[in-house]
Amino acid sequence: MEAPLTTDQLEREGDIAADYIEEFLDICDLDGDIDIDARNGRAYLSVKASDADNLRVLSKPETVNALQELTRLAVQNKTGSFSRLILDIGGSREAREAELAALVVRAIARIEAGGTEADLPAMSSYERKLVHDIVSASGYRSESSGEGRDRHTVITAA
Image (cartoon, rainbow, N blue to C red; front, side, top):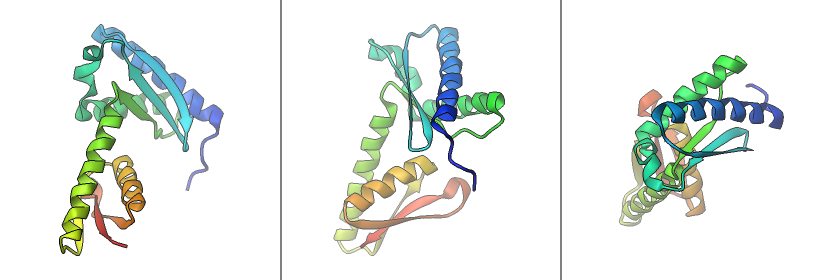
């Protein structure tokens, strides 16, 4: 297991990623303000615009995930180390978190209606972590199951 990155290393990742995203936005002729944060052992980049429509095409979950992976590769190219940075565009992560919370509520309702467990669809490790936190706060248990792209969360009563 690798040692956690220092705040300086995370800030460097954030700076490299911000430069990459800024260049990407310039190529796309889009305006956006970039905020960088380092927390929980990850660099977080948030791209916002005063005109929400300006980033609408980039804020779709599939697009954010693809751009996040490209940004991670750009960081890795400069640092030589794998990056776990998280990218948010136009509030996409907050919107996805709300979708995941609603998904958990529906799954818990199935358990309360007599089910022994509820399987959620496959999702990224970051999204599964969010789901585990939501499930725990709801008083239920969860664990990840499956491999690779099929890895998903299973919720059970506590």
